[in-house]
Length: 317
Ligand code: XMP
Image: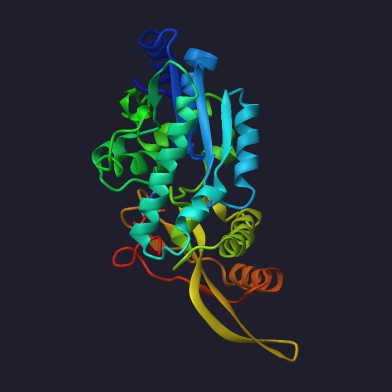
């Protein structure tokens, strides 16, 4: 009979035997899967697990520092690498959605390769791959996607020559959450919405600048914190804000403004393959819209996305 506790016991014992005294490298994303995989491996091999958490500059507001602290608090041997400038430089001027994804994938591989090469004699690459990642081409898992899509470019980076260990590859998402809970991982972390590997880059339509990232981080934080404060966060499968490449006219006092428009998106889904927009209370939308327009300089209009998937997708890019 499958229980989270028995899964943890057998998996940890199996990992101990398989890995022995070997060093293992793992990329943490801040998401549920890589975190649960890391804690399982940490139980088995302790500080021989070397975690790398890369800031691509496209995470949510304050997420890099707060999640890094959380990882350290869990006792993980983790190195935070702030590569924001490197990603933003590489992205400058690119407005094609797939072009952005390719650049982010390439830079991630470069940064990860530099870092993992500093861990001498690493033998294994651990990944938080879960069962749906194994069977489906669409994945909500950042690193596994970016790594795969890079296979045909030039020579293989060194870390891709490592043996691969994927302790969650037989589990579905809800099982991963239950395993995480049974190991004492913070409820809030386990309940986090999925977040795409390319991050805010695919929610800033058109080209990306540091200023646009800052604006979207502010908007997104107001929306997400609002959902939490109103007890709506856990009723939504995924939510986020999109910065549109449109300016529209507004008024502020006696002045005419000509500023950015943001779209809010919140969907219900079970696996991301199909999704429906969430009927958020009007009062909540009203308050959120006012907060955004009053607090975020450069935004004068907020719209709510009421498209279901299919035919729309969850992300706009
Ligand atoms: P779509 O927009 O295709 O999104 O309806 C379905 C789910 O996949 C996520 N998504 C991505 N995740 N890299 C990722 O790691 C990507 O390039 C990517 N594009 C979409 C999206 O956030 C949603 O959960």
